[in-house]
Image 1 (tube, rainbow, N blue to C red):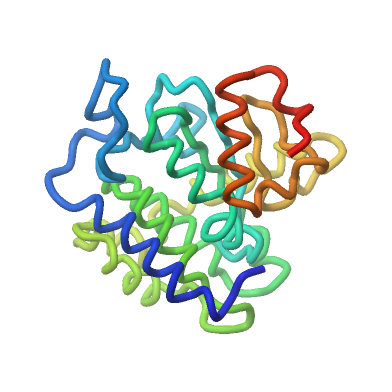
Image 2: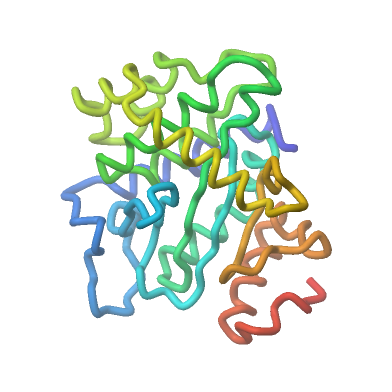
Length: 251
């Protein structure tokens, strides 16, 4: 996992993503460039909405040829490594280029194993950010600023403080949603969706982070690419060239 020394660089990368979203916001439930194949100029233009299942947050062009679904827990150090130093930046780039739509399902099981309720609070806050059309930016900030293991948790105060890094996110509706756990039912349903994703052989869930590309799970053989930005980016490009054969990749 990546800690300490990378924090400044990671924070800078997240800041670039957030600041790129400044300015007038389009309707991000449908997209700002319908019928266009031009890349999104910034994270602020990327469509984002809650999927029909009520638990999947969809980010990117609805017509993108490839769909990458990621299962994460906000307190998971491996998820932070994926998001800030591994495949996450490559995934964001592919979303901006309209090659991929990203989907996120959030677990909160680490609260049970580590104690506290930081995962649940963070998932609730992410859902509240979606209501404000600022999920993509806030998601980047939360992982860039993930607490050290055993350090200060994702408290209400900390989640609101981090929201200050996303222009336009703080406001009465968002703040109230965070402090009241408005989306508690979403948090519970998302955890159940994560558990179901493990199937009969993994009744407690597939582990985090886990990625599915076009409904095919990234196998243990390829799992290392999740933590390698260059390799994951190349995998996504390979899928664009050969949508059916990527699981045989030797990356």
